[in-house]
Length: 474
Image (cartoon, rainbow, N blue to C red; front, side, top):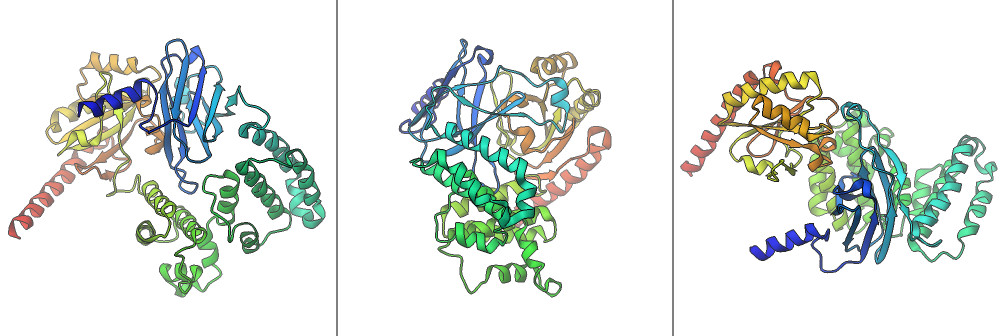
């Protein structure tokens, strides 16, 4: 047990994930980020786009940072730094010296703004040569995106007469002879998009020409961007061509995907199925319970592990704030370095709230939370996630006003605001002892939360007695 703890400690101190060997190194120096924690993310799959931690490290007091990790194939990674969000492609067996923009924290107004969007930048790799992937893609994209921005309407209107194939030949000339497979595939599907816009308008024709009988490139952004666009809202669009007035959801789904031709053994068809199901949740046409049944089926019986993972990721995403499903996990840390997870509050409900000490309504509610905590402390735990730019502001307020419940800073779990889709402060959620969401956007203390909670607690208690009684009678 002690040896395991030591390994974890060493991995955190030296920014090394728990892996057998390191094949990628990212390093740099920027004193403005001294003592900050860097987290590099990837999308776990190209449909759900659920964030997944790739690597983490702590910047030293002199601004130096370095992280090493294993990587099986090229990925598109990002890092969130205050007002910035930076992107870069990372290849196996590479070392990256990166340069970052000077540290610029969000202002209080940014933090309180539910519509804040980060400033996008591409991470500068200072040791890159002309054939490095990020260098080549940025060089290509500069020409490609400029052409597309200035000629999109002409492509649509003129179709074959737009001369797009001649333009593609010119774009391709600087990169003839490239040996980087990721980059070659990237250009191939970017060109496919141009032809699709100009004259290859039929979806099935594009799929047959560029996708069928080819490997599914889950990590190639150009490949998945075009495939996703071709199948956006695919289920409802295809179902509209059928006599859906007399067809139930499952019949429409099976008709589109042809039950006589089993998807087993065809990763492309599984991918398209998953994309169709994902989008169907947000169209709000079909019953979510039927969509979830189909997702569960794919997560269990899909022929490919990638498809199973995507199915589970989609389910996690669409049920994240769905009542009676698992609430998004907590992985927060208190000021005295104690971990805060739902498992810590076994047997209790959790009244999770997002607050800011500079917000007048939040300050009012904090006083009411103090009353609630005293009233229900045996069965209800209160967890306040402070979004203050300076956590000390909230801690001082808590100390001055004797707030004794759990208060943590959102920065200790940077994706927590996104996971709970918080747009205003304060926002409340009620989670039951099993970690399932009981009420999303729960009533605030001033909205008679105590009355709602008494009813919920009584119903839960009676159900637990019934379950125990049934177990004793077996």
